[in-house]
Image 1 (cartoon, rainbow, N blue to C red):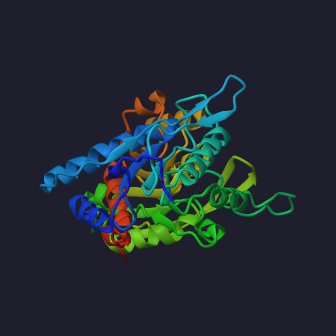
Image 2: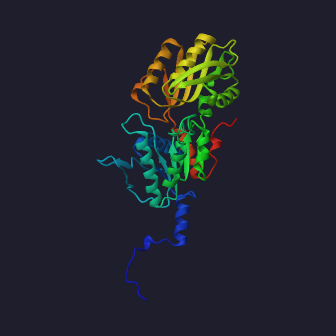
Length: 368
C-alpha cells in the first residue's frame, strides 16, 4: 500500500530526537513552563515573570519564562471569550487571575468566569497541567451557611466548578477559611502563608517588651499566636460580635497589656474597616496603646475602609498599615501615606518554580 501524503520530517519526533531536545532544554517532567494571565491577573503575572527571569539570570541561567497575557475579552453582549495565540500542548501552565479587581469595572463573577473558561481552553488544547494562581480566593467567606439562614455553601460550588473547568492545582495566598482546602477533593491546594512575610516586615519589633501582637477575632488567634511566639512577643485576642452584617463590636481583649505601648494587629483582610477601627479604639482608650501597626494580606479597597483608616491615623495612633498586592490596589488607597504595599512577585515566582520542578513549596517559608 502506498502513501501519497507527504509530511515534513521535522514534524515527527523519533525517541532519539525527543531525548536530545529534552536534554537541550532541561525541561521539568511537567512540561515546559508557561505563565499566563487573564486581564485582571496581568498586573501580578507580569511582575512574577520579570522577577522569575531576574532570578534565573542572577544564577547564571540562560533560561527564560514564556508569558501569554490577557487572554480573555468580552463580546458586545458581555459574554466572555478566551483565545490562545500559541500552541500550548504539553505545557505546564500557571494561570494568574485577580478574582477581585477594584481598579476595573469587572465583577468577581465576571473574573471567575474568565478564569474557568481560560482553564478549559488550556485543557482542551492539550496543556499537561493547569495551576490556577489566585492570590485572593473569592467566596472563601461563604464556606458555610449563616446560622438560621437558608444559604448554600458557595465556596464548595466554586471549587466544583474549578475542578470541572480543568484546574488541577490551586495556589492561593492566605485564604480567609482553611476549610476551603477540603472542598477541592483530589486536587492539591497550595496555601501560601503570610507568617514569613509579616515576620520580616515587623522584624524591628522582635523581642521588644513594649510591643504586643493582637488578633482581631478568634479566626486570627492561631496565626497571631504563631507570630508572637516566633517574634518573642506577648499576644492578645479580641472577642468580636457582629449584631448584623458589616457591623462589628469588640467586647473585650484578652491579654496582658502591662507595660505595652505598641500594638501589631494582624488579620487576613480589611473589608469595610469596621473591625479594625473598633479594635484600635478599644486598644487606645482601654489599654493605653500609643502606637498601632497593622498587617493585612488582602485589602478589598472598599470605600468605607478608606475613611476609617484615615480616622485611625488621625485619632487612634495608627502609624503604618501593610497590605499586599493580592488584590490590585486603587489609587485612593495607594495615596494613603500610612500604607505600604508589598508585592507578592518574589513569593509567587519561587512558589511557581518549586511546583514546576516538583519540589516542596513549604521549604521557602518559616515553619513554626
